[in-house]
Amino acid sequence: MLLQTWTIEGFRETSHALLNMYKSELTLKRNIYENICHSENKSELTFMLACWAHDPYMDNSTLLKLDAMAAETGHER
Figure 1 (tube, rainbow, N blue to C red):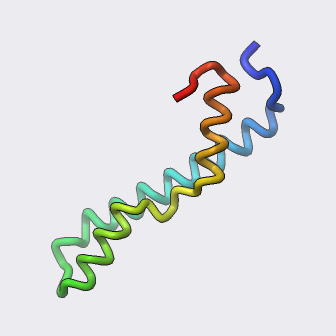
Figure 2 (figure 1 turned 90 degrees about the horizontal axis):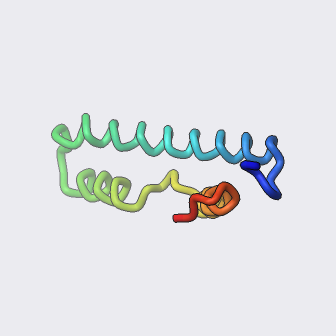
């Protein structure tokens, strides 16, 4: 049995939240990658670097759910 305590609906909702979170982060990284060479000043570069390094779309509560999903399915990180 794949799921012991989670419902299919909970697993689906969390999966969609993870997908949207990673999609947003990928879009941001692509934007930075495509535009960093067009930066005109140091503050723009600093902002892009901070966005790249700090993963603003990575939500801690959703990442905790990812850990719970991994534990639920026997794939703990």
